[in-house]
Image 1: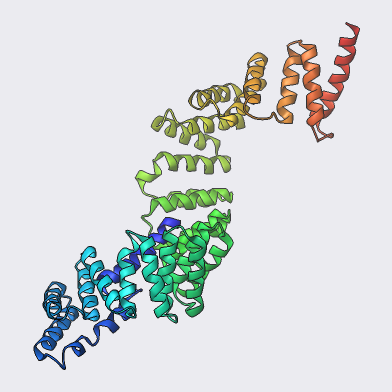
Image 2: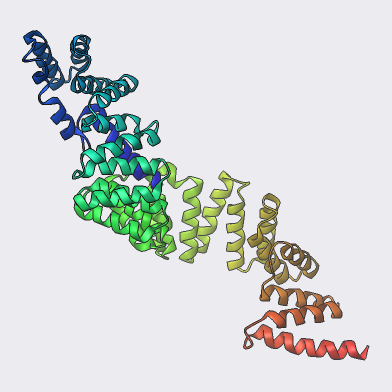
Length: 441
Protein backbone atom coordinates (compact mmCIF):
# COMPACT_ATOMS: atom_id res chain seq x y z
CA UNK A 1 0.00 0.00 0.00
CA UNK A 2 2.62 2.49 1.07
CA UNK A 3 4.79 2.02 -1.99
CA UNK A 4 1.80 2.23 -4.37
CA UNK A 5 0.62 5.63 -3.08
CA UNK A 6 4.11 7.03 -2.72
CA UNK A 7 5.12 6.06 -6.24
CA UNK A 8 1.98 7.56 -7.71
CA UNK A 9 2.67 10.85 -5.99
CA UNK A 10 6.29 10.98 -7.09
CA UNK A 11 5.39 10.10 -10.66
CA UNK A 12 2.86 12.92 -10.72
CA UNK A 13 5.44 15.41 -9.44
CA UNK A 14 8.25 14.31 -11.72
CA UNK A 15 5.89 14.07 -14.68
CA UNK A 16 4.87 17.68 -14.16
CA UNK A 17 8.49 18.74 -14.20
CA UNK A 18 9.27 16.71 -17.29
CA UNK A 19 6.36 17.88 -19.40
CA UNK A 20 5.20 21.08 -17.77
CA UNK A 21 1.74 19.59 -17.44
CA UNK A 22 -0.12 17.76 -14.75
CA UNK A 23 -1.04 18.36 -11.15
CA UNK A 24 2.04 19.91 -9.61
CA UNK A 25 4.00 22.62 -11.36
CA UNK A 26 2.58 23.87 -14.70
CA UNK A 27 1.13 27.14 -13.41
CA UNK A 28 4.44 28.10 -11.86
CA UNK A 29 6.32 27.20 -15.02
CA UNK A 30 3.88 29.18 -17.14
CA UNK A 31 4.48 32.27 -15.00
CA UNK A 32 8.21 31.95 -15.47
CA UNK A 33 7.82 31.55 -19.22
CA UNK A 34 5.39 34.41 -19.70
CA UNK A 35 7.68 37.40 -20.24
CA UNK A 36 11.21 36.37 -21.32
CA UNK A 37 11.34 39.05 -24.00
CA UNK A 38 11.48 41.79 -21.36
CA UNK A 39 15.14 40.93 -20.69
CA UNK A 40 16.53 42.06 -24.00
CA UNK A 41 13.90 44.26 -25.56
CA UNK A 42 15.35 47.61 -24.47
CA UNK A 43 18.95 46.78 -25.34
CA UNK A 44 19.06 44.43 -28.29
CA UNK A 45 16.09 43.79 -30.59
CA UNK A 46 17.96 40.82 -32.09
CA UNK A 47 18.22 39.05 -28.75
CA UNK A 48 14.63 39.93 -28.01
CA UNK A 49 13.56 38.32 -31.28
CA UNK A 50 15.60 35.24 -30.34
CA UNK A 51 13.72 34.92 -27.06
CA UNK A 52 10.37 35.36 -28.76
CA UNK A 53 11.22 32.54 -31.16
CA UNK A 54 12.47 30.38 -28.29
CA UNK A 55 9.20 30.92 -26.45
CA UNK A 56 7.30 29.93 -29.58
CA UNK A 57 9.37 26.73 -29.71
CA UNK A 58 8.47 26.01 -26.06
CA UNK A 59 4.80 26.62 -26.82
CA UNK A 60 5.10 24.10 -29.68
CA UNK A 61 7.01 21.67 -27.44
CA UNK A 62 10.08 21.90 -29.70
CA UNK A 63 12.36 21.94 -26.67
CA UNK A 64 15.55 21.05 -28.51
CA UNK A 65 15.24 24.08 -30.81
CA UNK A 66 14.29 26.31 -27.87
CA UNK A 67 17.31 25.11 -25.89
CA UNK A 68 19.67 26.05 -28.73
CA UNK A 69 18.21 29.56 -28.87
CA UNK A 70 18.47 29.99 -25.09
CA UNK A 71 22.10 28.85 -25.21
CA UNK A 72 22.84 31.44 -27.91
CA UNK A 73 21.18 34.12 -25.79
CA UNK A 74 23.05 33.15 -22.61
CA UNK A 75 26.38 33.26 -24.43
CA UNK A 76 25.82 37.03 -24.51
CA UNK A 77 23.72 37.47 -21.37
CA UNK A 78 25.07 34.85 -18.90
CA UNK A 79 23.65 36.63 -15.83
CA UNK A 80 20.01 36.32 -16.84
CA UNK A 81 18.51 34.08 -14.15
CA UNK A 82 15.15 33.66 -15.82
CA UNK A 83 16.63 32.40 -19.09
CA UNK A 84 18.83 29.92 -17.20
CA UNK A 85 15.56 28.72 -15.69
CA UNK A 86 13.95 28.52 -19.16
CA UNK A 87 16.88 26.50 -20.45
CA UNK A 88 16.62 24.19 -17.46
CA UNK A 89 12.94 23.74 -18.21
CA UNK A 90 13.80 22.67 -21.76
CA UNK A 91 16.41 20.21 -20.49
CA UNK A 92 13.83 18.78 -18.12
CA UNK A 93 11.41 18.26 -20.99
CA UNK A 94 14.23 16.63 -22.98
CA UNK A 95 14.88 14.28 -20.04
CA UNK A 96 18.38 15.62 -19.41
CA UNK A 97 18.22 15.97 -15.62
CA UNK A 98 21.91 16.74 -15.04
CA UNK A 99 21.88 19.69 -17.46
CA UNK A 100 18.52 20.82 -16.07
CA UNK A 101 19.84 20.74 -12.52
CA UNK A 102 22.83 22.88 -13.49
CA UNK A 103 20.58 25.53 -15.06
CA UNK A 104 18.13 25.60 -12.16
CA UNK A 105 21.00 25.96 -9.70
CA UNK A 106 22.45 28.83 -11.75
CA UNK A 107 19.06 30.54 -11.92
CA UNK A 108 18.59 30.19 -8.15
CA UNK A 109 22.10 31.52 -7.52
CA UNK A 110 21.54 34.58 -9.73
CA UNK A 111 18.06 35.25 -8.34
CA UNK A 112 17.45 33.80 -4.84
CA UNK A 113 13.82 34.92 -5.09
CA UNK A 114 13.01 33.02 -8.28
CA UNK A 115 10.65 30.49 -6.72
CA UNK A 116 10.09 28.38 -9.87
CA UNK A 117 13.84 27.68 -10.01
CA UNK A 118 13.81 26.21 -6.50
CA UNK A 119 10.62 24.32 -7.21
CA UNK A 120 11.93 22.67 -10.36
CA UNK A 121 15.35 22.08 -8.83
CA UNK A 122 13.63 20.10 -6.11
CA UNK A 123 11.57 18.19 -8.65
CA UNK A 124 14.73 17.30 -10.56
CA UNK A 125 16.33 15.89 -7.41
CA UNK A 126 13.28 14.29 -5.83
CA UNK A 127 13.64 10.78 -7.25
CA UNK A 128 17.42 10.48 -7.05
CA UNK A 129 18.28 12.52 -3.94
CA UNK A 130 15.24 13.46 -1.86
CA UNK A 131 17.40 14.85 0.94
CA UNK A 132 18.83 17.45 -1.48
CA UNK A 133 15.33 18.16 -2.77
CA UNK A 134 14.30 19.10 0.78
CA UNK A 135 16.55 22.17 0.75
CA UNK A 136 15.21 23.40 -2.59
CA UNK A 137 11.58 22.83 -1.64
CA UNK A 138 12.11 24.49 1.73
CA UNK A 139 13.20 27.67 -0.08
CA UNK A 140 10.24 27.38 -2.44
CA UNK A 141 7.90 27.15 0.56
CA UNK A 142 9.47 30.29 2.01
CA UNK A 143 8.93 32.15 -1.26
CA UNK A 144 5.41 30.78 -1.83
CA UNK A 145 3.87 30.59 1.67
CA UNK A 146 0.28 30.66 0.45
CA UNK A 147 0.62 27.88 -2.16
CA UNK A 148 0.00 24.27 -1.09
CA UNK A 149 2.04 22.77 -3.96
CA UNK A 150 5.52 23.58 -2.60
CA UNK A 151 4.43 22.27 0.80
CA UNK A 152 3.13 19.10 -0.84
CA UNK A 153 6.44 18.56 -2.61
CA UNK A 154 8.48 19.37 0.50
CA UNK A 155 6.39 16.89 2.45
CA UNK A 156 6.99 14.25 -0.24
CA UNK A 157 10.75 14.83 -0.13
CA UNK A 158 10.75 14.63 3.66
CA UNK A 159 8.78 11.38 3.55
CA UNK A 160 11.29 9.92 1.09
CA UNK A 161 14.09 11.02 3.40
CA UNK A 162 12.59 9.08 6.30
CA UNK A 163 11.46 12.21 8.17
CA UNK A 164 7.90 11.07 8.63
CA UNK A 165 6.81 13.45 11.40
CA UNK A 166 8.13 16.48 9.53
CA UNK A 167 6.44 15.25 6.37
CA UNK A 168 3.11 14.94 8.19
CA UNK A 169 3.42 18.53 9.41
CA UNK A 170 4.00 19.81 5.86
CA UNK A 171 1.14 17.76 4.43
CA UNK A 172 -1.14 19.16 7.12
CA UNK A 173 0.03 22.71 6.34
CA UNK A 174 -0.78 22.13 2.66
CA UNK A 175 -4.16 20.72 3.63
CA UNK A 176 -5.01 23.89 5.57
CA UNK A 177 -4.43 25.92 2.42
CA UNK A 178 -6.37 23.61 0.10
CA UNK A 179 -8.34 20.71 1.53
CA UNK A 180 -9.64 19.78 -1.93
CA UNK A 181 -6.27 18.59 -3.28
CA UNK A 182 -6.47 14.81 -3.60
CA UNK A 183 -2.67 14.45 -3.71
CA UNK A 184 -2.35 16.24 -0.37
CA UNK A 185 -4.79 13.81 1.26
CA UNK A 186 -3.10 10.80 -0.31
CA UNK A 187 0.40 11.96 0.63
CA UNK A 188 -0.69 12.68 4.19
CA UNK A 189 -2.41 9.29 4.41
CA UNK A 190 0.76 7.60 3.17
CA UNK A 191 2.86 9.33 5.80
CA UNK A 192 0.35 8.47 8.52
CA UNK A 193 0.53 4.81 7.51
CA UNK A 194 4.31 4.96 7.84
CA UNK A 195 3.83 6.46 11.31
CA UNK A 196 1.52 3.58 12.26
CA UNK A 197 -1.49 5.91 12.56
CA UNK A 198 -3.90 3.82 10.51
CA UNK A 199 -7.19 5.35 11.73
CA UNK A 200 -5.91 8.83 10.84
CA UNK A 201 -4.72 7.51 7.48
CA UNK A 202 -8.16 6.03 6.85
CA UNK A 203 -9.73 9.45 7.43
CA UNK A 204 -7.44 11.01 4.81
CA UNK A 205 -8.11 8.27 2.26
CA UNK A 206 -11.83 8.75 2.79
CA UNK A 207 -11.42 12.50 2.25
CA UNK A 208 -9.64 11.78 -1.04
CA UNK A 209 -12.40 9.37 -2.06
CA UNK A 210 -15.04 12.01 -1.29
CA UNK A 211 -13.27 14.47 -3.60
CA UNK A 212 -12.72 11.98 -6.43
CA UNK A 213 -15.13 9.05 -5.89
CA UNK A 214 -14.31 7.63 -9.29
CA UNK A 215 -10.56 7.33 -8.68
CA UNK A 216 -9.87 3.59 -8.52
CA UNK A 217 -6.42 4.06 -6.96
CA UNK A 218 -7.96 5.93 -4.04
CA UNK A 219 -10.37 3.04 -3.41
CA UNK A 220 -7.43 0.63 -3.55
CA UNK A 221 -5.42 2.60 -1.00
CA UNK A 222 -8.42 2.94 1.30
CA UNK A 223 -9.20 -0.76 0.99
CA UNK A 224 -5.66 -1.76 1.90
CA UNK A 225 -5.70 0.61 4.88
CA UNK A 226 -8.99 -0.85 6.12
CA UNK A 227 -7.72 -4.42 5.78
CA UNK A 228 -4.57 -3.49 7.71
CA UNK A 229 -6.94 -2.49 10.54
CA UNK A 230 -8.77 -5.84 10.21
CA UNK A 231 -11.84 -4.02 8.86
CA UNK A 232 -12.20 -6.78 6.32
CA UNK A 233 -15.76 -6.19 5.19
CA UNK A 234 -15.31 -2.50 4.35
CA UNK A 235 -11.87 -3.26 2.94
CA UNK A 236 -13.25 -5.90 0.59
CA UNK A 237 -15.88 -3.43 -0.63
CA UNK A 238 -13.24 -0.80 -1.41
CA UNK A 239 -11.09 -3.34 -3.24
CA UNK A 240 -14.22 -4.27 -5.17
CA UNK A 241 -14.64 -0.64 -6.25
CA UNK A 242 -11.07 -0.68 -7.52
CA UNK A 243 -11.61 -3.99 -9.30
CA UNK A 244 -14.64 -2.60 -11.11
CA UNK A 245 -12.18 -0.38 -12.97
CA UNK A 246 -9.31 -2.90 -13.07
CA UNK A 247 -10.85 -6.37 -13.28
CA UNK A 248 -7.60 -7.81 -14.61
CA UNK A 249 -5.67 -7.11 -11.39
CA UNK A 250 -5.60 -10.64 -9.97
CA UNK A 251 -3.27 -9.69 -7.12
CA UNK A 252 -5.88 -7.33 -5.70
CA UNK A 253 -8.58 -9.89 -6.48
CA UNK A 254 -6.85 -12.42 -4.23
CA UNK A 255 -6.52 -9.80 -1.50
CA UNK A 256 -10.26 -9.22 -1.71
CA UNK A 257 -10.92 -12.97 -1.51
CA UNK A 258 -8.72 -13.21 1.58
CA UNK A 259 -10.62 -10.35 3.24
CA UNK A 260 -13.97 -11.98 2.49
CA UNK A 261 -12.75 -15.25 4.00
CA UNK A 262 -11.68 -13.35 7.13
CA UNK A 263 -15.28 -12.14 7.40
CA UNK A 264 -16.55 -15.72 6.94
CA UNK A 265 -18.20 -14.69 3.66
CA UNK A 266 -17.20 -17.93 2.02
CA UNK A 267 -19.71 -17.92 -0.81
CA UNK A 268 -18.79 -14.35 -1.76
CA UNK A 269 -15.12 -15.32 -1.62
CA UNK A 270 -15.66 -18.19 -4.03
CA UNK A 271 -17.62 -15.93 -6.37
CA UNK A 272 -14.87 -13.31 -6.31
CA UNK A 273 -12.23 -15.96 -6.93
CA UNK A 274 -14.19 -17.07 -9.97
CA UNK A 275 -13.60 -13.67 -11.57
CA UNK A 276 -9.82 -14.15 -11.56
CA UNK A 277 -8.04 -15.38 -14.66
CA UNK A 278 -7.84 -19.12 -15.26
CA UNK A 279 -4.09 -19.08 -14.67
CA UNK A 280 -4.51 -17.33 -11.33
CA UNK A 281 -7.37 -19.61 -10.25
CA UNK A 282 -5.08 -22.61 -10.68
CA UNK A 283 -2.11 -20.99 -8.93
CA UNK A 284 -1.00 -22.17 -5.51
CA UNK A 285 -2.06 -18.99 -3.62
CA UNK A 286 -5.52 -19.14 -5.19
CA UNK A 287 -5.93 -22.85 -4.44
CA UNK A 288 -5.05 -22.20 -0.79
CA UNK A 289 -7.68 -19.47 -0.62
CA UNK A 290 -10.22 -21.68 -2.37
CA UNK A 291 -9.57 -24.39 0.21
CA UNK A 292 -10.06 -21.91 3.08
CA UNK A 293 -13.40 -20.83 1.62
CA UNK A 294 -14.58 -24.37 0.95
CA UNK A 295 -13.47 -25.58 4.36
CA UNK A 296 -15.20 -22.65 6.02
CA UNK A 297 -18.35 -23.50 4.12
CA UNK A 298 -17.97 -27.12 5.32
CA UNK A 299 -17.72 -28.41 1.76
CA UNK A 300 -15.10 -30.91 2.85
CA UNK A 301 -15.03 -33.09 -0.26
CA UNK A 302 -14.48 -30.08 -2.53
CA UNK A 303 -11.91 -28.77 -0.08
CA UNK A 304 -10.04 -32.07 -0.15
CA UNK A 305 -10.00 -32.08 -3.97
CA UNK A 306 -8.62 -28.55 -3.97
CA UNK A 307 -5.85 -29.54 -1.57
CA UNK A 308 -4.99 -32.53 -3.73
CA UNK A 309 -4.57 -30.16 -6.67
CA UNK A 310 -2.41 -27.85 -4.56
CA UNK A 311 -0.27 -30.74 -3.40
CA UNK A 312 0.31 -31.83 -7.00
CA UNK A 313 1.63 -28.34 -7.75
CA UNK A 314 3.73 -27.97 -4.59
CA UNK A 315 4.38 -31.32 -2.90
CA UNK A 316 6.95 -29.76 -0.56
CA UNK A 317 4.81 -26.86 0.60
CA UNK A 318 4.39 -27.17 4.39
CA UNK A 319 1.25 -25.03 4.42
CA UNK A 320 -0.48 -27.41 2.02
CA UNK A 321 0.40 -30.40 4.22
CA UNK A 322 -0.82 -28.48 7.28
CA UNK A 323 -4.16 -27.73 5.60
CA UNK A 324 -4.54 -31.40 4.62
CA UNK A 325 -3.80 -32.33 8.23
CA UNK A 326 -6.37 -29.93 9.67
CA UNK A 327 -8.97 -31.10 7.18
CA UNK A 328 -8.26 -34.67 8.28
CA UNK A 329 -8.78 -33.59 11.89
CA UNK A 330 -12.16 -32.10 10.93
CA UNK A 331 -13.09 -35.44 9.36
CA UNK A 332 -11.70 -37.30 12.42
CA UNK A 333 -9.20 -39.12 10.23
CA UNK A 334 -6.49 -38.92 12.88
CA UNK A 335 -4.09 -41.33 11.22
CA UNK A 336 -3.93 -39.21 8.06
CA UNK A 337 -3.68 -36.06 10.16
CA UNK A 338 -0.67 -37.49 11.98
CA UNK A 339 1.05 -38.37 8.70
CA UNK A 340 0.52 -34.89 7.32
CA UNK A 341 1.71 -33.15 10.50
CA UNK A 342 4.84 -35.28 10.38
CA UNK A 343 5.34 -34.15 6.76
CA UNK A 344 5.08 -30.53 7.91
CA UNK A 345 7.62 -31.10 10.67
CA UNK A 346 10.10 -32.63 8.26
CA UNK A 347 9.97 -29.36 6.33
CA UNK A 348 9.61 -27.06 9.35
CA UNK A 349 10.89 -28.74 12.54
CA UNK A 350 10.08 -25.68 14.66
CA UNK A 351 6.44 -25.43 13.59
CA UNK A 352 4.61 -25.41 16.94
CA UNK A 353 1.16 -25.55 15.34
CA UNK A 354 2.13 -28.78 13.56
CA UNK A 355 3.55 -30.20 16.78
CA UNK A 356 0.35 -29.38 18.65
CA UNK A 357 -1.66 -31.01 15.87
CA UNK A 358 0.57 -34.08 15.98
CA UNK A 359 -0.03 -34.36 19.74
CA UNK A 360 -3.79 -34.38 19.17
CA UNK A 361 -3.61 -36.80 16.25
CA UNK A 362 -1.35 -39.34 17.96
CA UNK A 363 -3.44 -39.17 21.12
CA UNK A 364 -6.68 -39.97 19.32
CA UNK A 365 -5.14 -42.92 17.48
CA UNK A 366 -4.05 -44.09 20.96
CA UNK A 367 -0.33 -44.09 20.12
CA UNK A 368 0.59 -42.94 23.61
CA UNK A 369 4.40 -43.32 23.39
CA UNK A 370 4.55 -41.18 20.23
CA UNK A 371 2.12 -38.73 21.76
CA UNK A 372 4.50 -38.25 24.71
CA UNK A 373 7.41 -37.75 22.32
CA UNK A 374 5.46 -35.05 20.51
CA UNK A 375 4.52 -33.41 23.82
CA UNK A 376 8.17 -33.34 24.88
CA UNK A 377 9.17 -31.70 21.59
CA UNK A 378 6.39 -29.16 21.94
CA UNK A 379 7.43 -28.34 25.52
CA UNK A 380 10.91 -27.40 24.22
CA UNK A 381 9.40 -24.72 22.00
CA UNK A 382 6.45 -23.27 23.91
CA UNK A 383 4.71 -23.50 27.29
CA UNK A 384 2.24 -26.35 27.24
CA UNK A 385 -1.45 -25.52 27.28
CA UNK A 386 -3.73 -27.01 29.92
CA UNK A 387 -5.30 -29.50 27.44
CA UNK A 388 -1.83 -30.68 26.39
CA UNK A 389 -0.85 -31.16 30.03
CA UNK A 390 -3.96 -33.28 30.49
CA UNK A 391 -3.08 -35.37 27.43
CA UNK A 392 0.42 -35.96 28.79
CA UNK A 393 -1.00 -37.06 32.15
CA UNK A 394 -3.53 -39.37 30.51
CA UNK A 395 -0.85 -40.94 28.28
CA UNK A 396 1.34 -41.74 31.29
CA UNK A 397 -1.75 -43.14 32.99
CA UNK A 398 -2.67 -45.33 30.04
CA UNK A 399 0.91 -46.65 29.92
CA UNK A 400 0.78 -47.54 33.62
CA UNK A 401 3.40 -44.95 34.65
CA UNK A 402 1.56 -43.87 37.78
CA UNK A 403 4.13 -41.54 39.43
CA UNK A 404 4.65 -39.69 36.15
CA UNK A 405 0.89 -39.60 35.61
CA UNK A 406 0.23 -38.18 39.08
CA UNK A 407 2.87 -35.49 38.62
CA UNK A 408 1.39 -34.57 35.22
CA UNK A 409 -2.17 -34.46 36.56
CA UNK A 410 -1.09 -32.16 39.37
CA UNK A 411 0.64 -29.84 36.91
CA UNK A 412 -2.52 -29.74 34.85
CA UNK A 413 -4.65 -28.96 37.91
CA UNK A 414 -2.29 -26.16 38.96
CA UNK A 415 -2.70 -24.26 35.67
CA UNK A 416 -6.26 -25.15 34.65
CA UNK A 417 -8.64 -22.27 35.30
CA UNK A 418 -11.83 -23.98 34.16
CA UNK A 419 -13.01 -25.89 37.20
CA UNK A 420 -16.24 -26.87 35.51
CA UNK A 421 -14.66 -28.74 32.60
CA UNK A 422 -14.77 -32.51 32.15
CA UNK A 423 -10.96 -32.58 32.06
CA UNK A 424 -10.77 -30.89 35.46
CA UNK A 425 -13.13 -33.40 37.12
CA UNK A 426 -11.43 -36.36 35.45
CA UNK A 427 -7.96 -35.15 36.45
CA UNK A 428 -8.95 -34.35 40.02
CA UNK A 429 -10.60 -37.74 40.50
CA UNK A 430 -7.76 -39.66 38.89
CA UNK A 431 -5.14 -37.78 40.92
CA UNK A 432 -6.92 -38.75 44.16
CA UNK A 433 -7.00 -42.39 43.04
CA UNK A 434 -3.32 -42.38 42.08
CA UNK A 435 -2.31 -40.91 45.43
CA UNK A 436 -4.12 -43.76 47.18
CA UNK A 437 -2.64 -46.38 44.85
CA UNK A 438 0.88 -45.07 45.15
CA UNK A 439 0.44 -44.72 48.89
CA UNK A 440 -0.56 -48.43 49.22
CA UNK A 441 2.63 -49.35 47.45
